[in-house]
Amino acid sequence: MTQQPTTGRPAARPRRRVGARAGTRPVQSTPVTTRLADIAAQAGVSEATVSRVLNGKPGVAATTRQSVLAALDVLGYERPVRLRQRSEGLVGLITPELENPIFPALAQVIGQALTRQGYTPVLATQTPGGSTEDELTEMLVDRGVAGIIYVSGLHADTTADMERYERLRAQGVPFVLVDGFSPKVQAPFISPDDRAATTLAVTHLVSLGHTRIGLALGPKRFVPVQRKIEGFVKAMQDQLGLAAHTVESELVQHSLYTLEGGQAAATALIERECTAIVCASDMMALGAIRAARQRGLDVPRDVSVVGFDDSPLIAFTDPPLTTIRKPVPAMGQAAVRTLLEEIGGTPAPHSEFVFMPELVVRGSTASAPR
Image (cartoon, rainbow, N blue to C red; front, side, top):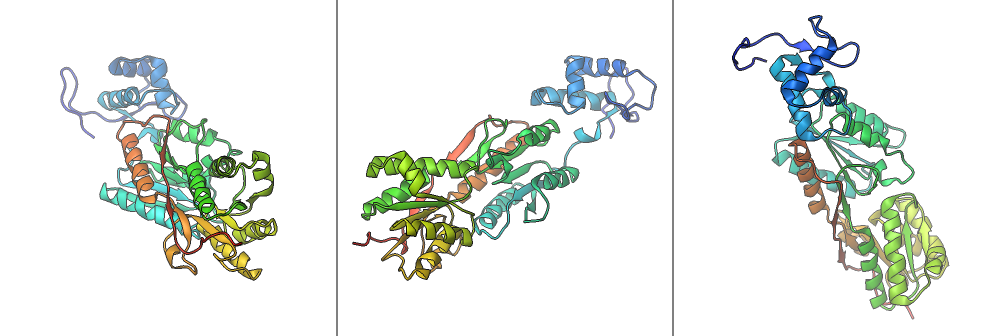
């Protein structure tokens, strides 16, 4: 790289290595403190701030960080590897397994939005027994991605260590988190309104005369699960007058986000005489329909079933599934827009952007049986 000529300084000179740690000494024998002082003076900041930037430490404003990097370039120092300009063409997208069709649908929206902005999405999928989220993150960072979007990652798990995201931020990698929220992570979050989702489902089923409504969902440690329970319990209290402890102990069943998980949860709820079941995913809802049929029950005549997501092709099941439509296009586009603002040096506030879901009534719900 060459520099523009400046008064009293050659037009270009060889890059010198700079850093506050061993292994980043310059070609010249100039003391580290002298180099820090030069960079600090050029950037108009303290030597301590320069040291924090060079070592990838958090707590430095984006504009200040850019001033220090610009000073490195002007003075002819070589940026430490971790601070070199990242590729503008690659953005990482880390998702769970792709068996649940909602994840490919969201990946497609995000991928298309990135492509329109001139970026290339790099899809990294977690599979059972495969790479972990941390391993996928390391792989993407090593490839110099400009940023990362996480979908339903460890940020949604209340038992997970959130320090992994702060370490990523310290490396200067922008990221956005979709589905799930943690007050411990300084980052923008994109979520559907899970409380409103179960409220919509309960309201619909109560209007059909159901009074014994069950909720089938995943493990309780996940933030979206906890929020769905909160919305469900409040709706059952407000609309049917049931006590919160009764709802949680008798009408909420935890399982896995799979067809088999939905089948197991629905079996338990049907045994408790539920005439309607709200499921936390469309895959679970298909499992609930299977459970009802195995017991000789008809959907929706004997048991009504509501899904969540409105996954592709779900309108063509037998019966077509009533579901809560997750606002996938709006969420995907918001995730990309927010990440690109971060990449462009305009960090989004530590906040959660919440999108309202929509009830889609089809053939899997009907009036309560007499």
